[in-house]
Length: 272
Image (cartoon, rainbow, N blue to C red; front, side):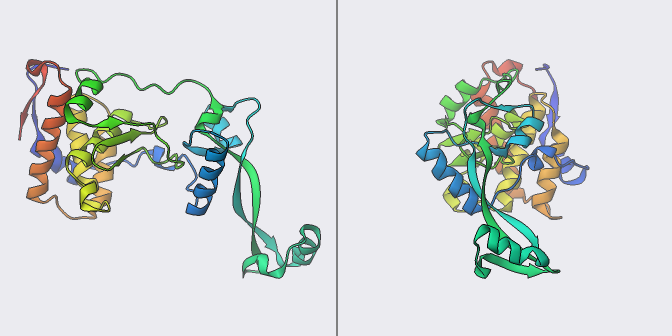
């Protein structure tokens, strides 16, 4: 971390609102499965003692540079299939379906739902280990201890989710997160800002947490500010950041940085 660098946090917030941003492709790498299919996959993982995690098809894991472990059995999901009207009668006979199995009819076709076995969670695959690099000038273990926050294994099936926070003291970062440090700061911010105590997360919560992550990453010299700006602008929807939120953002960022910084003399000076 560079010494004697003065960073205007107020300017960072202005840039977050006004400067162009870029949506990271990490939010679209995986398919967004329905709640029903996620529950179905979780039940199968539980019954087979498999650790839940990001879910993808055999082909998609291969495209992402990972391979299904030898001997692993695929998970079953319920998927929609479009059948042309002229093939419907034949399909009824072959699969012993009933007319009620069709969910709808559109443009001469009918949608049916069938169970297919073609999906695997991360724990069923192998490849290069997912181990995020240490954050220069900031120690995660020291910070989590100081903040009284515990990190748990990521168990969501949605591979597009980068991380999550639960309750008032637990965070998790996806092993396939594109920017794990930024995600960690974002989820820690949710906790120390008390967002989950307010109930369901809302757009302002997301803005506050991502602005905290933006400041932490900029101070520590980490990449990705353009992705944070796009995230903030998406949730702001053209509004501005309230002054009360700005102060909360500054305080949370300062608290996180101090918690993980061994030497205060090496941390860049901030202009709030």
